Length: 411
Image (cartoon, rainbow, N blue to C red; front, side, top):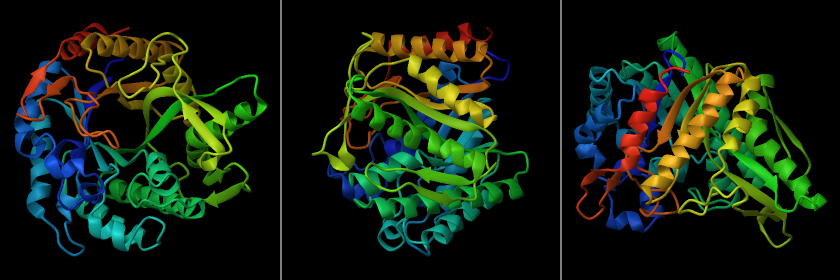
């Protein structure tokens, strides 16, 4: 790979450490039995030492807002100090930190009083951004929001994530406010750190019709592909967000995000097949099919490495560097995980050889963690966690990723 290529692993704070003040803690009952999840908040030094064994040169992690601001007007500076210590450890290992400000979770007070469809959400989130940017030192790569469209779909269309709303009109208000926050956070970060690299991490998927012979399936797949993959990239290019839901009038929303992007974070996992179903929410039914014979993950997601090339090609229209900020598989089988990594890194290398400016690859995740809506059974980690004893154990996949990094240092 190119000199300076970022080889990393990605994590999120809540998925490793939990938080009693977060909206998700009361949302999922399994967290009442495992409130500290992997106990990473206490075991961070042990976990970060694993990075040395892997040989990565970058690490993506997030801040848990609800720990830093447990009540509306209460700030816990000791938590900021904790995350600053993590940055110091990374620097001592010569590992580049990539910091995510918002990774799905919120303080409970925020989601109750200022959910994203309320305009008051914007100044409240920006207070948090200002506090962090003025306090945290040593970070060059910043992610403002992780997968804002997943937050939108789960929280405002399917109602399976906080705040648990099913209302397309409120979903659009929420998305507009989130993108306004990205734009303002971009400016706040650059005012304090002019050389910073700032982005979002956008979940992209390979989307295909369930039945290619069915014009309704094809039309829905095309509509879903534009909304899920392209509407955000187009908004960064034009400053206008175009949204079209089935049986609804197209909406054009002005958002102040044009050119507010220094690189683009791509999260990629799978391909999804889509068909028309009049009995489903939004008239869309989703399914994973093992078309290519690479198999399905333990979550039933199709393994489709070629899809990564497709979404990188889509994203390259932005004309900014691309970084794969998440790519991984939930499986207990280390050989399946190894094969997944090899095939997807091959896809990255092919993309680079075709002229696409890819600057990094982050495997999800360092250790097993809590997976949204799936509990503790989704084994994404390079290191296995025994959730009874909380002991970490290396897998063959960890050793292979280390080998992969060394063997692909140049191409």
